[in-house]
Image (cartoon, rainbow, N blue to C red):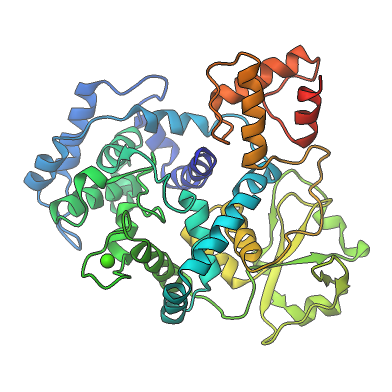
Length: 431
Ligand SMILES: [Ca+2]
């Protein structure tokens, strides 16, 4: 969950940066200390004065009555701060989010709910493996859906990141808070179960209130839309989002791993950033004609060909050397669900593995690949034995684990850092 949490910060922070101009930043409270209660109350009052009258109206009195119970939640401020923290690596995130445990649990869910998931796939046109993968990545299949009251989270965010008047008509943070209040006003959510991430995403497939208002559907036919308690509602809502916002081209993979001919590799040389050339979409057969090849499951090169000859474009998460892909329109559809390339690949890789695919053929350009959650738990148990009493064996590399790693790295004479991969783990744990 922490990993997912961090990722969302990345995606949401991107949206924030786009949305809030430098003039808006000047009006935002500093993030170095919690918002004082009187300042939060004044902000809520001001939001009450600006409640919308058109489209999705909200009366000032209704807003203030419901928001009166809200409190500033400092976890939102801390999450906004973390985005400026240390970089995270593709190979670490994917190793944890698509590890064997998550694959096995996803396969179990697919098998146990085969008929239901087939029905959702037929109704919305979204592959069942994609729906289950979203469920697995968002909340680890249900239990870790976040604990922050959504009303507190959305109001805290709206007060920490207010929009300037000229942006008022498209103020994401404020609309999210108003949507949270409307859901409570209309009894569409139970207040005690209305909890989620710092960004206000809630339920088994993590919808923010404004998106929930637009796209949530009743998947189990009981007349209620409950993405917190009903898996079927959560799955149908995720499928409806993908269908409505982007659409799905059946039979086309999200990505195809490729090898690029040596004479065309120069423009993809490592830059430290991802290279995603959406404007360079061509038919798959055209890439094949340029000498690009795919891989079969054993890693042998094969010609690029698919029924319908879809348009695809180059996507290299870290440049070359490293895995290279041709991405399809279905990649863009998942990107609209959560605008993070890493998120899309987590979902797509997990879905592919659920369907029996072995995973990427090309290794990441590192001699210290990422750890599964089982390995992180093993490392944490070892750290606890070494006397780090703050460490909890939860499989998530949180702050306490990272600080213990930093201390152990120093003790072993390794270069300073808080990261650990397969190789570092062996070095740390060897007697
Ligand atoms: Ca329902």
